[in-house]
Structures are given as C-alpha cells and as structure tokens.
Image 1 (cartoon, rainbow, N blue to C red):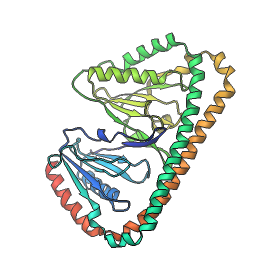
Image 2 (image 1 turned 90 degrees about the vertical axis):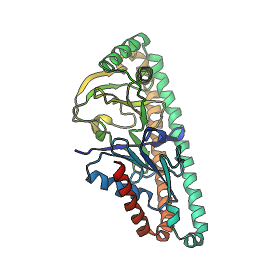
Image 3 (image 1 turned 120 degrees about the vertical axis):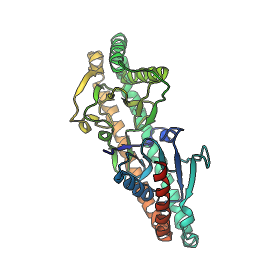
Image 4 (image 1 turned 45 degrees about the vertical axis):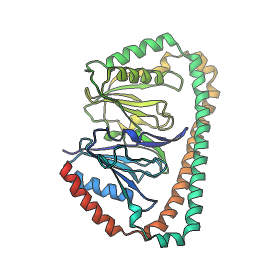
Amino acid sequence: MAKIRNLYPGGNTCYGFYSFYDYLVSPEVERKIILKGGPGVGKSSFMKKTAEEFFSRGYDIEYHWCSSDNESLDGIVIGKQQVCILDGTAPHVVEPHYPGAVDEIINLGNYWQQNSLRQNRPAIIELTAKISRCFERAYMRLRESRIAFTEWESYYQEARDDKAVNRNIVALAGDFLSGLAGGRQKSRHMFPGAITPGGLVSKIDSLIEVNYSLFAVQGSPGSEVKKLFSYVEQTLKLTEVEAEIYHNPFDPDYIDIIILPQTKSVLIDISGHLFDYAALLSGIKHLRFLDFDQLANKSVIETNEKNIASARERFASGIEGAVNFIRQAKAYHDQLESYYIPAMNFDAIETMRQDLSKQLLQIL
C-alpha cells in the first residue's frame, strides 16, 4: 500500500530562513523538475495534483510543506526517491546541478499575461516590500527568543552533573545504535515541523509508524539533551549508517528526532519546549525513556526558579510574536497572488502538467 509522508525542507528559525533543500532527494534521482514563477502562478497546485495522481496509482509520496504557508507545498518526491518536483523560487532558490541530464526548469511565468501584471506594478512592488519587512521582524522576534533560550540553558548548565550525563549518553546511545550494519550511506536532514502562519505545525505521525521502537528523552535546555543527539549523529556519520535526522524548527543546531530505517528505531526529544511530539505520537509506546532533568542539582534549579520562569515566558512570547508577523506576511502574500491569478492561463498549465505526468510515469 502506498504511503504518504509529510516533511519540511525549510524553516523560519532564529537564524532566519534555513534550508535543507539539498536533501530533498539524493544525487541518484532519475528526474528533478524545478518550478519557477511568481506568487499565484500555480506551483503548489501543480505539485498537489501530480502527487494525488501518482498516489492513486500506488506510488509513495513525500509532501514537503512550505513554512511560510502551511497549506502550500515546496516540493514532492514520488516513488523511491525517483522523481522530485520542487519550488525553486526565493527564499529557497534552487538551480539545476545536472541541467538536462537530471534537472529541468519549468517556468510557469511563461503562462502569464505580462501586460496585466505591469498594470498592477505599484501594488506588486509595495506588497513585496511589506512581505519582506514582516519576515525581517519575525526573525527579530525569533532572535529575541534565542537570547531567552540561552539564558534558560545557563541555569541547567550550572546545575548539571556532567559525569552522570556522559555516562547516560553513552549507555542510551549504545542501545539505540545496536544491531546496525555500517555501509556507505549518508544521513538525510529535514525539519519535522515549522513555525508557520498557522502557528506551530508538525505531522510527525506520518514519519513514525506504530511498530517503530521509540527511545524517548526529555530535559530542560542546557541539561545536555543536545549533546546526546550530537553524539549519535557523529557516530552515524562515522559509521556511514543510513539515518533521517530532523532538526529543531526553531534552532537547527539542535536535533529533535533521529530515525534509523534499518532497525526501525527512533530517538526523539519529547521535552515539548516548542512542539508536543508526545501528544502527536500518543499511540506509540516508549522502549526506553530518560529524563535529563533528573541528573541536575535540584537546589540550584530551585534557587533560579523565578529567572527560569521569566526566560521561558520570554522565549514563548518571541515565538508568538514571530508567528503573528509571519501571519501578516501570508496575508500580504495572498493579496499579491490576487494580481497574478487572473493573469494566468491555468488551462495551458494543466495540459502541460498532464503531458509531464505521462513522461514521469514512463520513468517510474
């Protein structure tokens, strides 16, 4: 039975927009279609229709969602990483690596009536500038959250028992990585969710099946959950074991989830500082569980309780402010699309899309 998976190749982070688009597919992909064109030209609809068509034919589909519009797509992957179609426009500009041999550009801008767009030039320019300002302000708020998060970390760093932490990291990592055969595989990096106009959105239940073994951990910032994931990632890299590594949508320097397809094992951080992954996976039991906060000096934490609460509140406030600015950007983007949609020849695009689907079907 065909499967659907939902991922995010890019995100609105404390470092600005962050891209993992190079990991959508491997270099061995048979065909990569890069869509170009402005807002409202039908890139997301093009991909949705194609994905639905091939899913109905029994092919696995990966939906790669847009962090700036949680109802829109930035890419799809069909089959066993055989075909990819993606949005190659800003802020995640993608250009062909192997033009003609693997990659192909389809410019949906060829299907618009340019005279109609020129008549609305002042409004288009103004709305584009407003969208940029909204994202600049959203990233300012996320940087504010990062400062609060760093302060929050500092209190648990002070209270940490490094010997106990290191001992537990080595033991848990050893259990998680047991039974793996090394090879020449590379890790794939993605986001499991995103900070979007609709708030914090994640669909990790499509990535983790009920028969997977969950190694769950939790802990406050600074308690060294990050160190565990970094240790596991480096070990996987050195042993060249296939892995899916899902980075934190707020700070991509942190890892939230590591999936090992070979053993169907999952290492997941269920601390819930940003996303409540535990609630999204409520039907799956934990094989192992470790709370890093239990390894901290409680008296140090109690002494700093008010400061920790303040840092936590400022962190959440910054996230909320960023979401509001991203939501404003989406509203301006919708207005911008209203100038492009009437100028498009969608019938001609659909005819072209159907012809492309026939070509892709031959490849698959």
